[in-house]
Length: 398
Ligand code: NIG
Ligand code: FE
Image (cartoon, rainbow, N blue to C red; front, side, top):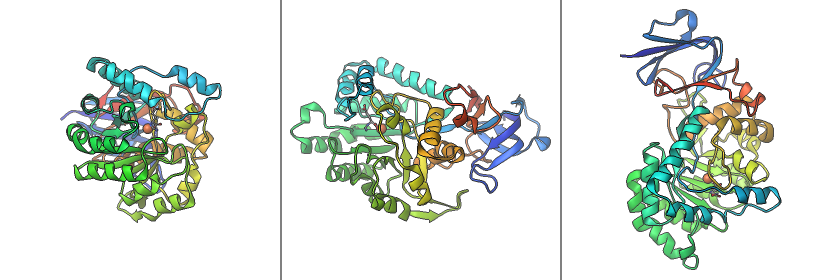
């Protein structure tokens, strides 16, 4: 069995050992056997291993879990971004532009983009990345988007209900029928999750409920885009359906926060309790659309489990960087650096209902990030600086 000792760690974030939320250990070592963490403890007691990496007192943390990304697309919308920075509002209308480009692209062009962005994210410490479809919006292009996504990630999400495509503009009921019928049938073999953009101008609550119910019946887990551009019923629909995550949560009423907080339960987990439905915040979208940020403090103070993700897509958030999102969450959303790092690792894992990632405890997947810094604090303290010195994924140094 191949073994690797990551040794001389000045600050180890485990998200699982000890009383503090990040489960910090100092002067620590991690033993990796094959693709798993086999042992965590003081450097002084570290077992021997076939290979050893001395990180020289640096900080080590679990690889980032980016639970929300749209990587299968063609073209970009830089001009739309420039227009926004000159004062135009973001409406989501540009999605159809990307749908046109995506349908016209070859499989290899789409594959190249997915791999480029996945590589970019990996170099910035992301060891798990969810990938959505949603720019095909017909049976063949949604199916191929997911087929290509599944080559790169096991966390794939069918987002046929991103917007109603132009050819169905005056018959949205027919489009919902297509999504629930032949499109879901073609997509389901490659998808783990189903998602709907529940928003004025996209899908209303009845359509969203119908589509998510079809997906559940086909064995897919539920997540949704909710309350991004304005207040609405999306968050409460997510809670009603037991969604793993409701994403964006930018415009929340007290009833939305109460609904999320009310499904909190005790668990045998490090946090002691968490909510069934995670609120996934995507500050890259507010940054890139120059919008007010979601109120993370209100959610955290109510006991809601919060995740951070990039929302990487060519329209509202063209970043693949979890460190950037952590820095935004701390500076703009008043999350503490510890809360933000937890949300970008263990929180993302909760949002994907995974207990084998986002933590560095024995048995967990050996996904580790070595920082070019002595503490995780530097992720927010030194924004825009390439602090990811080394990534180990599935036990393999990248
Ligand atoms: O999560 N809101 C819907 N979907 C994406 C944006 C997609 C786009 O603008 O191309 C989002 O922000
Ligand atoms: Fe999104």
